[in-house]
Image 1 (cartoon, rainbow, N blue to C red):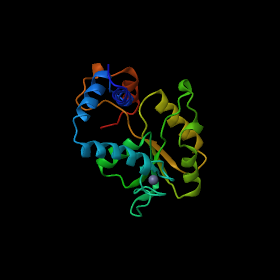
Image 2 (tube, rainbow, N blue to C red; image 1 turned 45 degrees about the horizontal axis):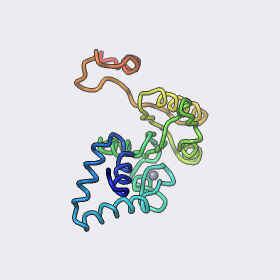
Image 3 (cartoon, rainbow, N blue to C red; image 1 turned 120 degrees about the vertical axis):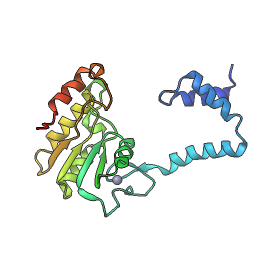
Length: 199
Ligand code: ZN
């Protein structure tokens, strides 16, 4: 039997994605071997994230700034193009690609009628407000190819069609190096629909 505090910390780790009882136990027991300073640092890092990280008031991405994130407040970025993504981690991914100089909008969720997640539950109205009030010329939708991603993409397309804004979506298709026989039907269908003429 674990002691009470150890049990509680194991349960905390088990809340993390992909961490089961065995891994959580391993984490906690290795932490118990940390020097006190190292354990303090670990605990402080969690408290700092809780206290300092907030959402950008414009795009919904994480930031430690008071109002706008570093991308929204960067005057060198082109704010007439908005890249719409599901979560803050996606921004980091696309920033790593490195050739995009527009701005982002983070929905922090996807519409999912099955799970009772409605348009009002995600960061969508502020996207419409940005389009209404800004000089937005293009919206690029980069949501995952799933029922929820598709529902959300179509919903966005519909609510912004009244504005003079071009809407595109990133292509979905077959990952590099994957044999076609292992691709699920929905991905194959989308790859087929979004085929590119090469001659
Ligand atoms: Zn921002």
